[in-house]
Image 1: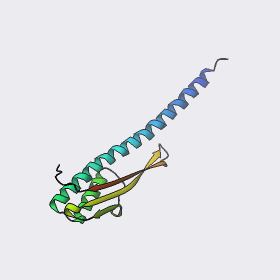
Image 2: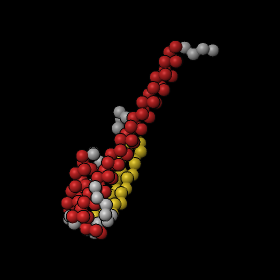
Image 3: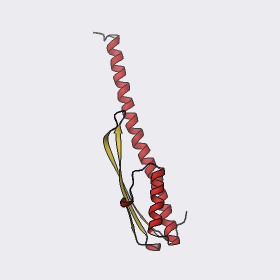
Image 4: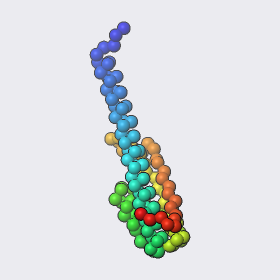
Length: 125
């Protein structure tokens, strides 16, 4: 028994909607991961520079928050832990990004990111 042309179109449309849905979720996830990678590289740079130049914690926190804002990452000042200074500098950051369903903007998944960065001797950027 052959399927009617309307049934075939409905099946094709359904598959296209599923493909668009998964593409959007994948895009959102990949975008979040790429922004986090850029953010992590910047944090390593800031920690090395701040450790070498003995910068204050307030300045380090401000630089990190500015970069997070630039990359549209949901990071607050209280999520940035700064311990030590100079060559004992240690920065920890933890935050979550919500992956949402397209069009209705409902959270479907939360991706957790955590970074522990320590000053390393002899490393420059």
